[in-house]
Length: 321
Image 1 (cartoon, helix red, strand yellow):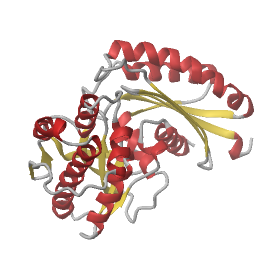
Image 2 (cartoon, helix red, strand yellow):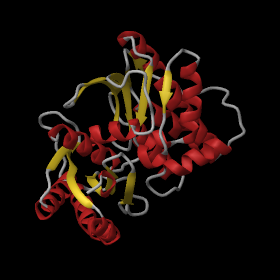
Image 3 (cartoon, rainbow, N blue to C red):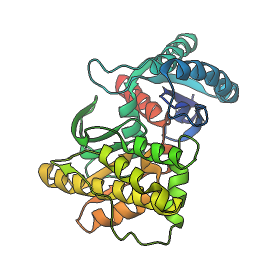
Image 4 (cartoon, one colour):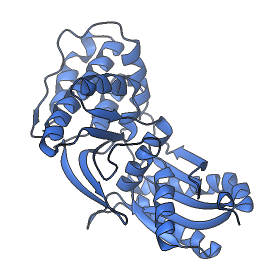
């Protein structure tokens, strides 16, 4: 078969999204389906058992859409996220759904099965549309509902070497944004409402929230306390802008420090929070003034997806052949 008729399938079942993607051997995304898990109104999250149940149902829904694709293409490999991070002891039950579905599919299709981590999936997806000067060493920021990490990434032919060099010491930006959003009456997850508000806000920020940043690490719970004291005295638009401005200023301080510390001037962003138009615009501008190049990708590759898994599977398949 021609290479364009051969595909690699990626699967990722994270805390809040069921994702399946397919990529051709010449690196064209042919399928990229995501179903966000349903979170009850006024709730601030999901238990793992609830998420597992929804993933099982969502896999069934997506399988109906991918049926025609499988009929027309030859599956050369399947790659699924097995754990949150590529370190010993990293584990969450939700990833077992995608992992075991992937293993079953590979057995039925008689093709190789590859495993990866949710973190590596995010990094690879965020790199998909960008050409870094040095893809073998860069900083990667993972900003999501449950994660706020800055990673020093070095890459060889076989795998990533990932070290956490910065981030949050308490809550994540995603948790901050969602908690503030729910407090203002928005449905969880509240990121898109906060982003729209911030972009539409015409008020100037006279005094931003106080930040706590040292040696690449942040303490963010204090931001939530500051917001709670003024949330009823300001418009939703202004509070939203104030919160996202604090994200930008915290990340700016962290990345300027780490860029100098490791002599790196390229930063790749991944995770749902990184899909914010307000954050990408403001942070890119501030970093460029300090000669740091920021790479933000399209929302479909920034938020939870399985394109990164498919790319990792493709790379491993090439090595084996």
